Image (cartoon, rainbow, N blue to C red; front, side):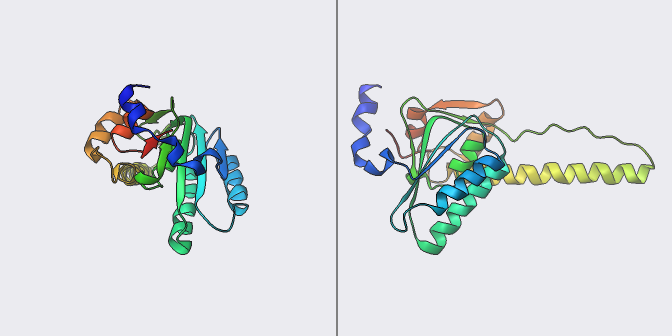
Amino acid sequence: MTDTAAATSHPTDYPLLALPHIHLHGQVDDTMYSSFRQQLANVPADGPIVVSLTTLGGDPEMARAMGDDLRLLRQYTGRETLFLGKVSVYSAGATFMASFPADKRFLTRGTRLMLHERQMTSQLALVGPLRAAVTIVQGKLHELEESIRIEEEGFRDLVAGSRISFEELQKKAVTNWYMEAEEARDLGLVLDVI
């Protein structure tokens, strides 16, 4: 860590981060979501909730579902939720991180973020009457357009309260943007590195 980073990081200011209430690791998928729900049901009734995450990515919709559960909890109970990214927060992990306000996000030293555009693998078979083929193509186009809208919502949430613009994130995400924890902190994507 550089002298500047050491001077600006104060891990002892955040004692709650030492013992997260919810530990998530591995692929973001249905199994992680089930584990998240079970752990969330067992958190103490009062006080902030700390969620730690280590992931190489996965299903962005499951990340959005977990984030939405926490958003509803914050709105209806007023409880504070804190995010702690550890080692790697890639792809769908960054989608989940975006559901926390920027000033409630933390990364451990040495953690890397990876941000990219949503991915799709699909084949389109056009067989039969021409009008049916047009309907199939229109359906796929609508799927793409909606996926882009969802991606943009997530990107806007991620950069809200930071020093990076939505447009800059969009440009960098095209080629898989990897960043170290300190860069994320300097850009305001997270509050601090511990």
